[in-house]
Each structure stands twice: as structure tokens, then as C-alpha cells.
Image (tube, rainbow, N blue to C red; front, side):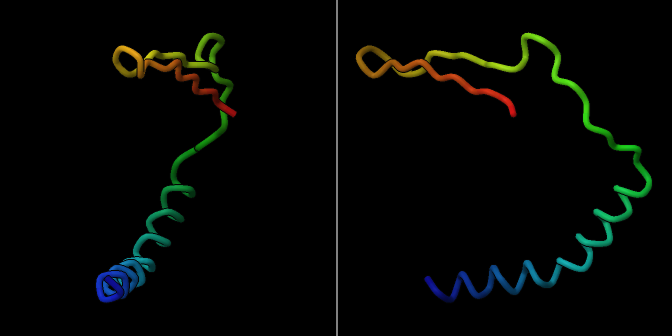
Length: 62
């Protein structure tokens, strides 16, 4: 198990410089801004499960 974790960490550090440059380019070239969440989309409700295991799920945005 430790062997796989070590390999995973090596792969992450191998690509980290590429990811840093890519993220910086995207932030510089795209005009990204925060926006308001439209009314009615702040909360999502759903029922999941079957029979006795049904449950109400509520997801909110922050």
C-alpha cells in the first residue's frame, strides 16, 4: 500500500509545474468573475433510496 502512495506522489509532483503554468495562463487570459446564483437554484432537494431506506437530501450553495 505504501508503494502505491509513493508512486502517486511522484506523479503529482511531475505534473505540478505544468498545472501551475496552465492555471496562471487561464486566469490571465479569461475574464473570470463571480456571479449571483439565480433565485430558485440556491437549494436542491431530492428523495433517495427505496422503501424503508428512503431519505430526503438537501444541498445548498454558499
